[in-house]
Image (cartoon, rainbow, N blue to C red; front, side, top):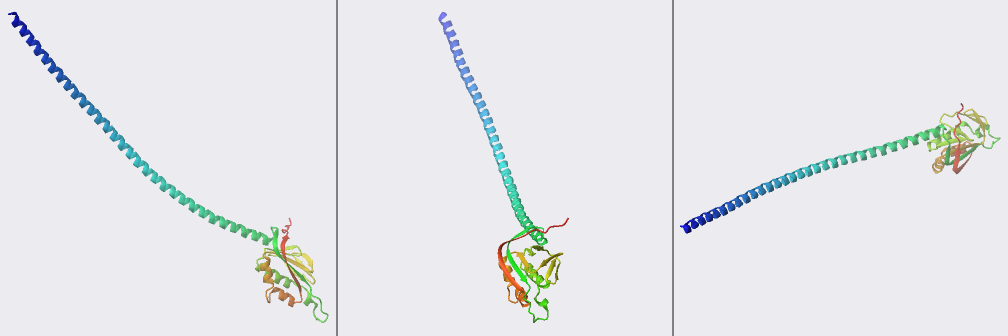
Amino acid sequence: MNNKKNSKGSFFSRKQFELLIVCVTTGFIIGYSYNQAKDNREAGTINSELYEQEDSYREELITQQERNKELTEELNSLQEQIRKYEKSFASDEKDYKKLVEQAEDLRLLLGELKSDGKGIRITLQDGDYDPKSLNPNDYIVHESHVFKLLNELKISGAQAIAINGQRVLANSYIRCNGPVITIDGTQHPAPFVIEAVGDSDTLMASLNLNGGVVDQLLNDNIVVSLEEHQKLTMPRVKVES
């Protein structure tokens, strides 16, 4: 009787143990499956976040590249405008320099500026009087002779002209009174020294042309001498206050 009871109690203990093993195993499997699913979900979430971040970086890069392209085009446009401004400024600067030169030439002609530089000096003297001649005026320097010389010098590019040290202006009044020439109210006796600042080669060549001014003066019995000078100085005209 006692042996049967012990056998029965041992049997239930074994079944309970086996059931415990099954429950533990099942719980482990379920727990492992849950953790694996959780890890997969977390990994999927991380991958999704990485993909989204990568897409964001890609879009930002594309946006930056487009912005760089716009800035490059804007820079090229500004550089082109600068080149146009530089060309316009260079052209305006040339025009400005030209106007300044023209204004300076005009002031030289008006006698407002002192003039110095290369030039020539022409001396006109009355010719030796021939008693056999009927008219002694044929041997005297007249204003017509001076005008011929002045006009030729101006045409040949003389920057400034003076007679016996007095500047001759574009509106100067010149008159002959016998052996004396009056320039703007100031009398000058012969000989008449005419100085001209300018290209001496050009001035000399224009005066010495065949049949030119010098030949005409010689034919009128005027004594003419010409000299080239490396530097002639003419004072500015004094304006009376």
